[in-house]
Image (cartoon, rainbow, N blue to C red):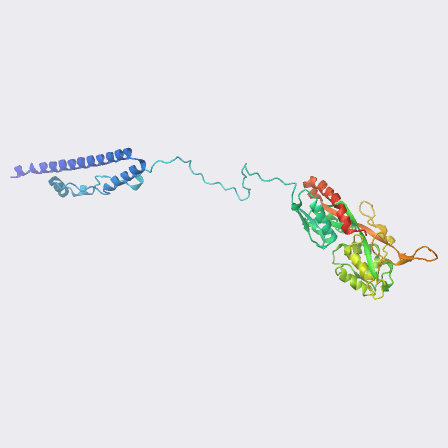
Length: 422
């Protein structure tokens, strides 16, 4: 019986191997046909339909192996060789294998290169960075909003080529204007010539970058005192006198400081840094020891008001007078170029409407009578100068000629305001 049993076992193994090979061949054939039908459907249908068909067919393919056909050979194979059951007879199709529909070919994305923080970003050739414009913003340091400097600055600004680029700044006057010019807060500024000379001597480094550009008009030194004081000249003022000068740093206050440097005796006068306006004029009218210094164009609005107030009394007598300022020491003051800082002119009835502020004098006999007419006083006249930053003209040289032309054109309007004639 052993001899008959021995050949049976090799035959059983041979039949099992043959069944496994047959099952593998059948499974491979089925997979090949399914993949072939996938390509056929994709080629025959539009792109969107083909994609849907591909997905439908692929969804029919099991992720794991297909279950074997219920044949006797398969059952015997499963029982005889259990380790073969774990093999995937149909490979799983991963999601990444689904190729998307073809679209327009795009260039590969290149990440933007940011410039280093220390370097400016390059500009597009179609958007050029503007060069330094010859029409850069021009700021003019002027004075009080209602003063002559502000009026003159606005008249000049309206005559420049691009008025909208001009800014007129309100300030306390000449002293502040020069400080702000030196600091770069403005490109142009008004100053009295004496204040400019004084500051140039005292602060040469600060003033080195500033130049006088254009004389605009002349300003007169009005020294107004009460008639009851008896003072008729500046040299007569002593320690009893109180002098209203305006704010510290104003042109009027700086002019008085120049006077006291030239005439040390004037330092005895008590300074009062109150605003110079009609309130100050009224204080002069009602006092016996308070005077007022006012630097302005001839026959300015405030001086016209003082002229009317002087005789506004029950008996019509003059209560205030203009005082002469003609000290020899003031005549010797010079600018850097050797020219006198002040020129001296007389104020009389022909040059201003100050008949109520001038001491009367007797005229020649006419028909046996000596008529009384207004007298005159001699006072310094100082130029109101337009000062410019030197680097501004160097950077934009064409603006200098434009500004000078604008000042010339604005001259008649400015003179009519600062020195009106009656």
